[in-house]
Image 1 (cartoon, each protein chain N blue to C red):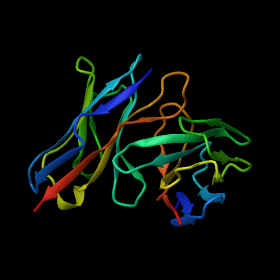
Image 2: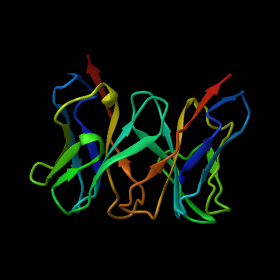
Image 3: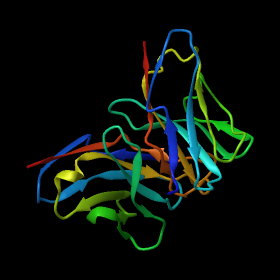
Image 4: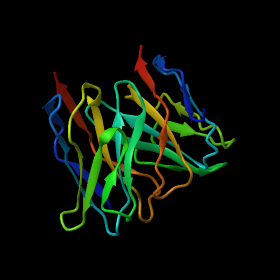
Length: 113
Length: 114
């Protein structure tokens, strides 16, 4: 079945450590997105990519980095510069940008040790 | 600029009674609108979408939403709630220019009492 796979499901970060969240899709979608979700809040856009080797900052990109070397993959690195990384991270993809609905993975929950 | 406001952070209904989740939007152009559902510790699932065809949109699991341009609303309804409907619901507006990603409301948590 086609879909989006996020791994790991749970992740713990130590102080000063960078961690990378994986997102893979086999839907042949061009566009991919990373969102952060905090309790009682909607989703906030971190980064998005419309095409391979290109990506744009979203609303809360500080302390995060991404790469898009393959169409299927859009990993997110949470750097030590992100002082409050504890959150639920969701990856999504769509056929294109604009008004296309997005398909979501099941998320990664990141916590601080 | 575009935005979406979900008017209730929590809604509680009894099983078998109607569900109404309210959403107002702001957009410079005729928008595309979506409703998504999120169960605990899961990703979001698309319930339905409005893209300027029929103003009454039917979705999965018996949900539907009506686009009312005069009221800038896109409320989600279901005639009879099931226990499995308990979840978080998000109203979403698609971009019309510039920004090329969706804008999410803050969510409405639906509780269904037995």
